[in-house]
Each structure stands twice: as C-alpha cells, then as structure tokens.
Figure 1 (cartoon, helix red, strand yellow):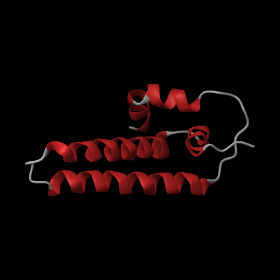
Figure 2: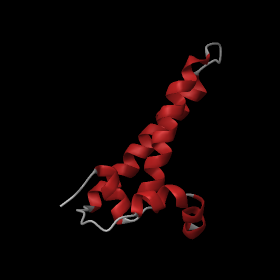
Figure 3: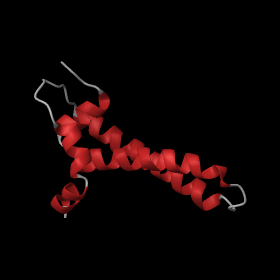
Figure 4: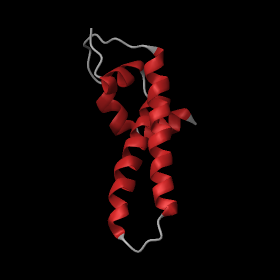
Length: 92
C-alpha cells in the first residue's frame, strides 16, 4: 500500500528527495511533521464542516490549511529522511 501511495505522490516526493548534499535528520522532526499535518487537516475539515455555506470566503482557509496538512502528512508518512529534513530546512 505504501509503495502505491509513493507512486501517486512521486512528483512531490522526488522533488524533496533529490540532491546529494549532507543533511541533518532527527526522528522527532518526522513526528512533529505528522502532528502538524493532523492539526492542519483537522482545522481545514472543521472549518469546512462548521460553515453554513452562505459566504464562500471560508474556502480560502480551507484550501490553504488542507494543502498544508496534506503536504505534511504525505512527507511525514511516506517521505524519506532526506525529504523530512528538506521540509525543515536542515543542513549540516
């Protein structure tokens, strides 16, 4: 299942996993990235579900937090150590 999902998100993951420069990775970075992804996705979903739909202005925060949450979850759960370190901007 993980291999299939990596194929679906290959363009994003290949962009973040490319390069050969040294990087510094800590396992806590992955855990924090997944936690932030869950928070942003939950925030996006709650705004989407709690709105009555009269004002379409709520769609912008739903999209921003939804994309940020999805990106964080994909990289945190499917990405390599290099991709996680690149998200955090970690270099030696």
